[in-house]
Amino acid sequence: MYKLNKIIPKKSVSMTPIEFLLTRQSSPLLTSPAPSANALAQILAAGMRVPDHAGLQPWHFTVISKSGLQKLSDLFVNNSGKEVDNLEKIAKMPFRAPMIIVISTQFSKHEKVPVQEQLITAGCSAHAMQMAAAALGFGAIWRTGSLAYNNGVKTGLGVSEDNEIIGFLYVGSRCKTLPIKPAKDYARKVTFWN
Ligand SMILES: Cc1cc2nc3c(=O)[nH]c(=O)nc-3n(C[C@H](O)[C@H](O)[C@H](O)COP(=O)(O)O)c2cc1C
Image 1 (tube, rainbow, N blue to C red):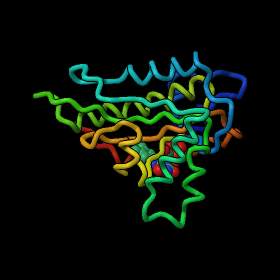
Image 2: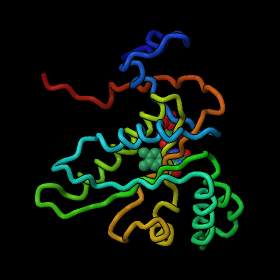
Image 3: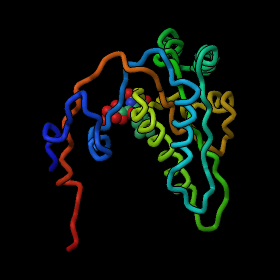
């Protein structure tokens, strides 16, 4: 197994691509500024550049920032139903970052590409955008929670019943540099056929 302490470069040295991949982690504590228009364009372009069977592009991105965060907060609160005890907490959720990219599916019927493949591809988009944000110096965290599966929230975001919100990617500037988490041992997760 790789020993992360051996591959983490000094702060002043930029990471190699493999170091970048092997030290990936989420950033839950985010603040302004959000990515600039240019940075956002690159993040979205990364989301488009994912493995995609038959090129169906089975995803949609809704970029929410500024007054959009309040709109999302209202949408969450208005659809919280049973979670009324938690309304204050729910109302604050979208403000945990200056930008949220909602990744939803846009399934189409295809004889060779079942929906689960399309779902995976949309997930790849979310991951690619998180990595792109990190490559540009921003932090991000992929969240769902019950509101991602809520029909009222889906409708408010223009996601049809047949489709899914697969994640809210919270993006922003990191509040602080968190220590790199230790690597996870792959030994019990891998089988080799030699
Ligand atoms: C589909 C999906 C949904 C997730 N939903 C949440 C969530 O609602 N809340 C949360 O704290 N983490 C959620 N996570 C996990 C975080 O994004 C993150 O991966 C986790 O906290 C582990 O941290 P790491 O990415 O630094 O390893 C979700 C991850 C995935 C892939």
